[in-house]
Length: 321
Length: 277
Image: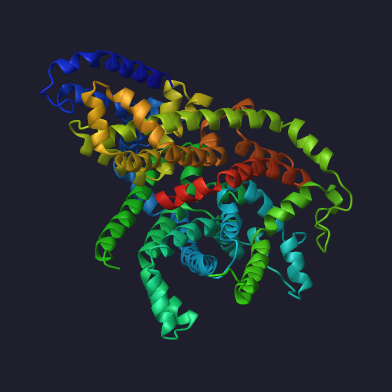
């Protein structure tokens, strides 16, 4: 905050200096050192903040990941341990499990895309009160994940929860234990991920659908094409860039699922919902293994980097649909 | 063309409304449970309209009990409003700088800032935590506000809008002797007001819902924000579902109202940025 007010007052000084300028009319005012200075002043708060809170931390976590620093023992206890942290991490069963769980979570992404696209097409063309439906499906996305997780904890209750009571009433004899059950806990997390994510994907698909030329549908209709034919032969190919974008954002955001798991299961039962981010949190802030946690950060950073790189390569080939 | 009601469209609308209702069932259940006495929360079949109303008692316990939501609300409002103001100011200054000022290295600096967008925030937590302990921002609202104030998304999005302002307009103001700050404040800013509103609403929602930063960077209970409060409330009253639901409703409802009022801005902003919170 303070930083900002400084910048503003410096900018005001700059304004006061300006009246000198008209004397040299033939010089272009949008060049020269004053222009440079103005530019730096405008971006200074953003740049300084980003340097301190992003660039500096990422570089220091690179350095820390080669130490065995434990937060409690302080700087004196820190030793350079080379690649030990990474070696430990690579042979750590829990970390493997966390990575595996995260890959299973990815299954939720295509499911979410299919549901969202179907809803988007229906809302775009076949219903009245479009805006109303947008609001309904968007609500879970803007709701607090913490509160949502608390609600689902109760809904998913194995014996007394409304979901299982309905299932039992429908004749299911042994309904799943949802978040209390090792095999169903991850699917439960995925279910909530899909429920909260549909709104976002739907909204982006709706924007993508506006770019599909109406004439194509009109021509297809004149040729007597069915709605299904139009959907598979026109809509799906023409929204493929949107699908690709959503696939990538979906994959990346699945690596960031944190709030939901922490509140819902804390990674349990028996680590069945542990993900790398949750593991990172546990190692850093509960076990206080700072150096080790830094190496987890770095590995995750590299995973995201690889995904982004793949996106970059594939996107280039995708330019013409 | 006369507006005729299409029967098929009407039927699809009704079916979609039913699906929508099922989709929102968890919310409806949450609200209904928060009005009930504890004994009736889990009765089957579900009673959507409470038999015994306990609305006042439940919410009174939540708002003034051991984890008073009054305090949590105040903290959240303070943090969210200040974060939104700071972030909008910083982002629009930077966005104007990148869009409308020709300074040396502007492209390189912009790329650096853009590149940080890919970094998952969790990978920064450990060192941010150490840094905060070291410079004394740990366990302060100021620290929390700063964490959400430097938004690449905001800078990028607002830059697109500033770029839409004609260069001639800026040039002629420059010729008349106006400095960049004056142009920014009196010409550029008013022109991009809708974009600023969009970003401000998004930032408000994201900050209000933020759980991760408060969880790691706050320790004192009296500084807790609402999301952290809901979590520790549910740890404390984990078996009293009516109270937990009243707490959840309290955390969700103000935002839903803001969203419904500003829904056009929110939806356009999301479509424009294509970015998840």
